[in-house]
Image (cartoon, rainbow, N blue to C red):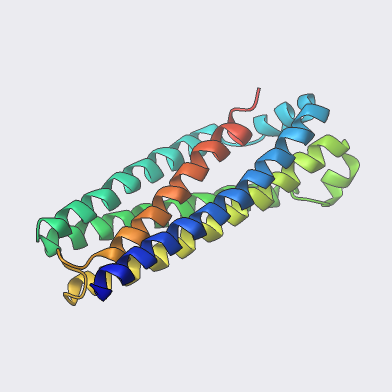
Length: 198
């Protein structure tokens, strides 16, 4: 009975934590909306500076990883730990691809002197500087959440391999999956905000 209460407590705790994360990013999205309303032309110009192909690729990568994380939970429920471990490894690979793409994208922008308060941005219109400031803050914070999600998935993977996450006890994997789905959901909003801005 106490085990069920612990499991319920962990699930409720994770949902409350996810709610706080939604509030954090929701506030940033509202801030974006306010500045977009004030500087629509400069936000469109800033969006044209971003690589839509990389943004779309990262979207596909995260969506696929979300599916494989869900598949790992199903596999562990069906008492197939090796299959679950394989799905988790694939998801971690997707997370790594996302971060590598983001590294090269940021690197290219910084190389072209496009970052907040760079000499180029200081000479640019305020709306453009605000766009890229929000771009770096929101995508950087999202990238940090991807790293945290990968750590959680890695811990879950180790626990699966050791048999501590199994068909009768998989709350850690389930909570890690919930966190990863939130990371993917946030990107679904971030991608059109910056890469498809009209």
